[in-house]
Length: 142
Ligand SMILES: [Zn+2]
Image (tube, rainbow, N blue to C red; front, side):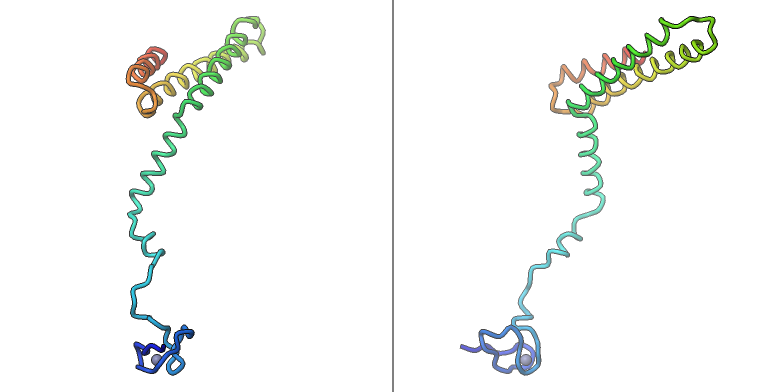
């Protein structure tokens, strides 16, 4: 069995992939899969939006909530030590106290924001938990 070259009409043996007469690839007029073009046809906007959603889901997942609250409470404990177990009249301790106060507000703000963001974004929790997290976060921030 031989087939005809689509370019020059010469006979091409079935075993050959190119036309022996003109060098054209066999069956070059047949539609060929183009994986590269399929990639390009995907709109860039959707892709970046999808990765943003993935990022948000990773950032506000259950694990991150637990980790964030754990770190927040740990920082609160450390800051309360800094504030309460230092002498107010010693210069170095005053710096420590000031740093402790800043650290304490950062921990509160961090936990409050984390709770609100997880409540708003994470849809793996049920509605009441999410609402509770948003309210709790609001209370912490207020
Ligand atoms: Zn040919």
